[in-house]
Image (cartoon, rainbow, N blue to C red; front, top):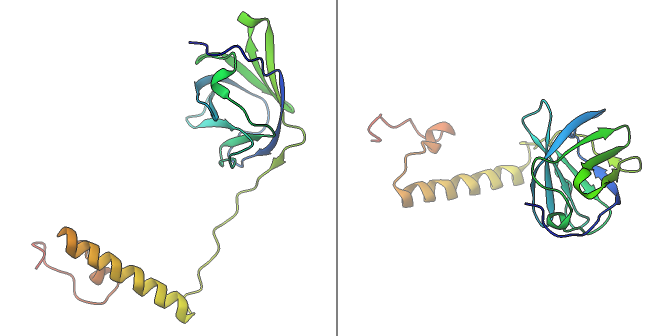
Length: 163
């Protein structure tokens, strides 16, 4: 069901995540929420998500420059669109208009590897030990057998019965 009658017209994206497909593609509207609009891209399993200016762009997302109520856009699940060179264009023939999101000035995020943790530092060992101790406590509280001590080499592995 179409919700609201707000005509978004033209919008500008400020950030494009690294998992958003590059180049031309077709999509359909998957779902609309107050602060996010999900697009199903033809030939892909993952969704592309439009978010408003108040949100961080997820890796598979596009952040707009303005605050939005996507559930007020004149779109419904199943409506179609396409990515052209520098824009997302939504087809909304029932309303006699198309909605356009300009991508030409958006920053394209790059995927970065997580920083390496240097295990030579005493602080790293202390943090690891604190986490391991807490996991051991949780294991004991829950009666679970995570075998953390054996995994870390602190004690021999328990038998299959947990003894």
